Amino acid sequence: MGLIASLPDIDKQPRSVFVMHEKSEKLIPLHTHRKGQLSYVEGGIAYITIHYKTYVVPARHYFWIPQGMPHILRIGHSATVLRSLYFYATGDADHPFYSQLGIYPASELLIQMINYTEKWDGKHINHKNYNFEFLVSLKKLLPQLNNNALPIILPITEDERMQPIIKYLEKNIAEQISLKALSTRFNMSERSMSRLFQSHLHISFLQYFKTLRMVKAIEMIVKTNKPISDVAFLVGYDSIGSFSNTFYAFTHSRPTDLRKS
Image (cartoon, rainbow, N blue to C red; front, side):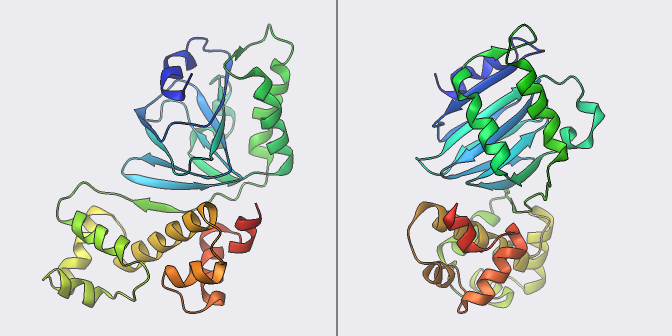
């Protein structure tokens, strides 16, 4: 049974933990549930869209989505396994971790604990089950981990004027495109182009383009076997050092570390 088909089952037992491990569908449309969602991304890449912002979740990272938060989930690689635990909301007010969306690198301990739950795939685990305390401990552990949230957020918009601009940037990700050059291409003043980005994406053109490059770089590192030097070149960097430093600023890890994982 896929995740879409399982959505109605998640909230059937409010005080349980619902376990779901699968190679997920490509797109799980806008939905919500009354449980907090802990999901570990294995072997690929995932994207969470909330309030017109898309969050990137690379392999060996996990995310927490608070109960009641509407979201879209997209899987960007066919080999991605999504290991999910949907937790009862009791006690969520005890720590701010449980009330905010977060994407974090997964420790070996957490990975092993989540993998261990695969034997209960598709089941509700509650206080009557012997393994419930294990899941309680896992949930309580989350705020105690060294959680440096991954800050890769790519805003999106439905504005018709922005669509051809975004598609152009995606197609020409390796080019050195300035605000002036972009404005000239679309017959706009630099001021008007800048305002368009700020009003619809709430981010500057330069920051958007840099973020887009990092997202594309993560996709290539995860999905292909291209050398890191080639990835750097394909997203517009002439220097591996400059690319690696920018990548680290976005992800708290080096490109080679993500490739190893």
